[in-house]
Each structure stands twice: as structure tokens, then as C-alpha cells.
Image (cartoon, rainbow, N blue to C red):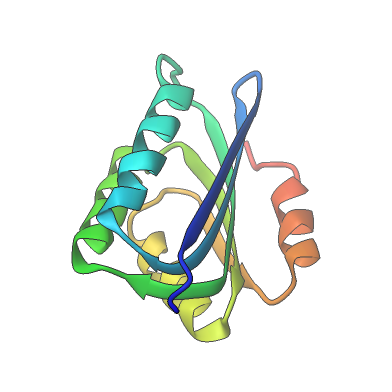
Length: 128
């Protein structure tokens, strides 16, 4: 049996957003049809939002081809909003995700073995 799941959370304080994304299995185009409108609506009408993202890929198995394209489009659309992205998970996937993602977002991107380390890094003050 293949396990697939997606958990998304978005919290906002003024212009600061915290996005939490947990992925199990392989990301699909249908997943991005859920993620993209949530993010678009949260950031709508804001000039310069600060988006901090915690991405848990410990049970991640990759992307479908169309989902990889969706990921690129989402990153390109909101590239200035992403200030910091912390990726937690399997070192191989985390390295790939951090490297590829850094091509499409303006902010910092790091991969971590432990969720606590990732959250601590996300909480650091942003450079102005």
C-alpha cells in the first residue's frame, strides 16, 4: 500500500507568514491545486510579505512530473515572498530540494536533520 498525505498550515502576524508543509508519498498535481490557492489567498494584496516555510519531507518520495512543474511555477510566482525555507528530512531529498529551490526563491534555504534545529533557524530575526 502506498501512503500519500499532505498537511498544510498557514499562520499570519501582520506581514509575517509561517507556512508548515508535511508531505508523505509522492507530490501530485492535485496536491498543488490545493497548496497554490491557499498560498495565493494568504498573500493576496500584500506588497512585501515575509514568508517563512517549514517543510517536512521525512516521508517524501518525490514529485510526479507535472507536480515538479507546479512546484517551479509556485516558487517563481512567490519568489520574493519566501524569506526563509527550512527543509527537514531524508538528506538526499533535502539536499536536492534545497538546491533546486534556491534557484527559484529570493530568500535563504537550508536543510536539517532535526525539526527543532529547523524551527530555531526559522525564528532567527530576518536581515533587513
